[in-house]
Image 1 (cartoon, rainbow, N blue to C red):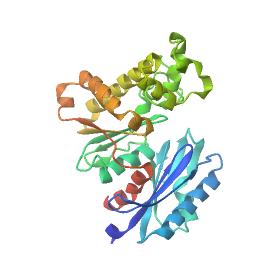
Image 2 (spheres, helix red, strand yellow):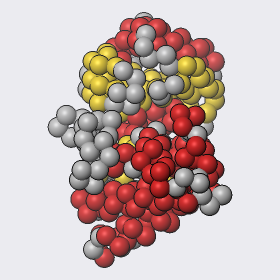
Image 3 (spheres, one colour):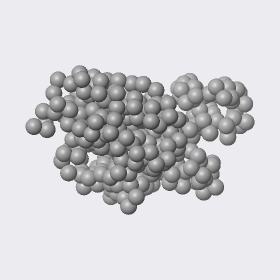
Image 4 (spheres, rainbow, N blue to C red):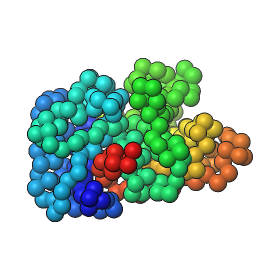
Length: 316
């Protein structure tokens, strides 16, 4: 029976690909990780297939399928990655490419990475028992996904919940997407680094203003924890932006729970929840915030979240 089977989850990131062999409870039985090297697409698909086969060889029970989460504009029906800016991929047949390399005997499901993560939370994590949930991933960029009445919101072109590109600050910073004032260019790793470049001259005594191209998001977080005023101003601006994203989603979708994930989301989870939550509560009508909770993601890895695509496909 499918309940006794296992799944392989694959999460494709800009620098690494993570795979996990997962059982129906979300427990990880085996893992693999290797560099993405996205510039050579066939070689990347080869590595994914070899990783899946390696985990399959270790499986103590049959593997029901493979779930793949990938950033960018992903069509879950065709498995094609139409555009993934951080990978440099355009119209890559990800699902079919991996399926063929596996000999065609394993079903493969592909989703946008944040959609896969949201389904992972619904299946294994902080969204269990919920019907209406918004998942927000704060990492290099800002991504989102929504579960509405128990089902994933996809939209006309599988482009729903691109919250990172909500234009919240007219004529604001130039985003990598070409628009100005997007949420992502304020609340993300890219956004914090852009903020240092924009405001370094206002805080010449800040060590962040002196680091130039060597600066990382980790440096900004460490400076924030030390009380650096430049880092503090950027984190405050990011939290206000996040709170505005949350309030926008609350007004449109009225979810019962917001779940925050992503590397940066976990690194400062308490701050995002507390300060972002204050902004959210100040920006919505009482009925839109009543009973709403904001919590940290509990699924241990993005690859585990991707494995939920297999179980989700069996239930729809």
